[in-house]
Amino acid sequence: MVQVRRREDGLDETDRLIVAELKQNARISNVELAKRVNLSPTPCYERVRKLERTGVLMGYHAKVDRSVLGQAQLAYVTIEYSSDHQAAYGDLLAALSAADDVLKLSELAGVTKLRMKIAGTDITTISERLKQWFQGNRAVVRYSTEFVTHAHIDRF
Image 1 (cartoon, rainbow, N blue to C red):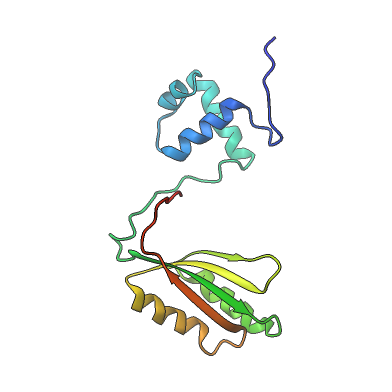
Image 2 (cartoon, rainbow, N blue to C red):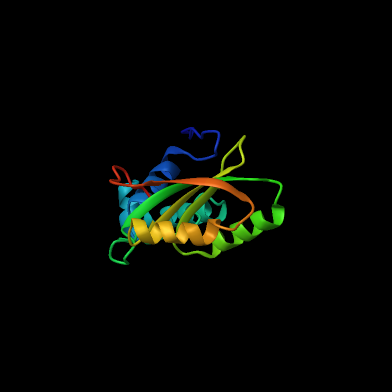
């Protein structure tokens, strides 16, 4: 009997190959995926379904060229906030969560700061958008913006 080596996360090498292939092309057919990972189609399909059920694969997404949508400019914004104004902080999170141009929002450990990735038409548009959200919000102590000039690696 061949012993299959699983890592701490419960995935074996074949599972990892499947995940790697789907990260490259989520629209690949099951037959083609099976060929690439050296399985027959049915076991490959079953493994993909198991990866979905266990939450390893959480969805399939289209990678969009934001410049075609008029959102070619990216920026990273660091937001320092005061925990003394919980209602205003909640309002800020609600506004940012509802905004399609906010691509990612993360709370940083050990500090009262958020880090946001935002897309917009240009620097002026993004700057105006930030003023709308932050000026007058009592929770926001200060914020700084860094505009992306070139993305060397852009993984989904």
